[in-house]
Image (cartoon, rainbow, N blue to C red; front, side, top):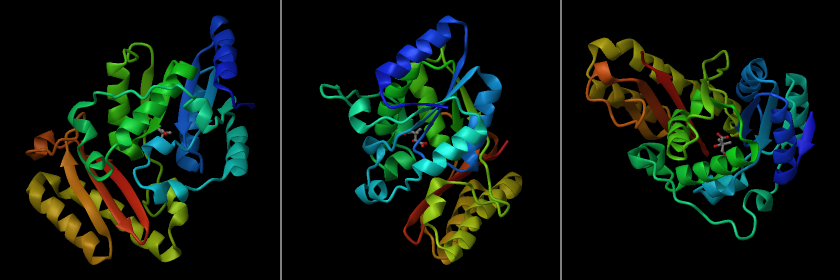
Length: 280
Ligand code: PAF
């Protein structure tokens, strides 16, 4: 695996490879890699000549400074995992490499998806995500981009980013299934901050999502959401939302026939977890 820290050197290297007809796949991450990320690397290596992974904890997408401060950093282990998974290139830039002096902040016109659900609880978050992904796509210009379904709203936002920046025709977006522990808990870098007991409790989020899916045909949506919220609250979660939504803009579904995905965000202890389940 080749390690690049400079954007210019990486762009030149990839351009030379592309000139020889090689395809490039890209997996953007913030490190603290787990099996979920590694499954993205697997899908990327299977579908491309060159797999690029980036590790960059992007400050502009953290609306909560405490969350940024405590974001786990496990670089040497991440490198070992990436080598074992057959990743070809790791891009490990500094903040000044991504946002150099004179870099002009852009505004992305994402429509209502920016403010729904996560957007409401994390103002500015998706502008920050778009800012860094736009920059990374400029540097890497991949043919294929791999994202985890665990961050479903982020996937929809990046799909929109590709459309509004005219990249949708050049980059194929692959949304890959969420990797789960045998308990059902969605794998996440944030799980590293859960105590043993919190980790056991956290499984309830997936159980409530499954419950919604099973009962969707015969139960009003409002009842499903209310019950899930109550169950989680009773177990000690601080629930931000339980929503049943349409894919695309994640507006609340009016009825079961337009219910594409159920989504939950809830905090246990000091850790805010999100998860979702496709309903059809
Ligand atoms: O999902 C993440 O890890 C980040 O939001 C991403 C896509 C790497 C952008 O910083």
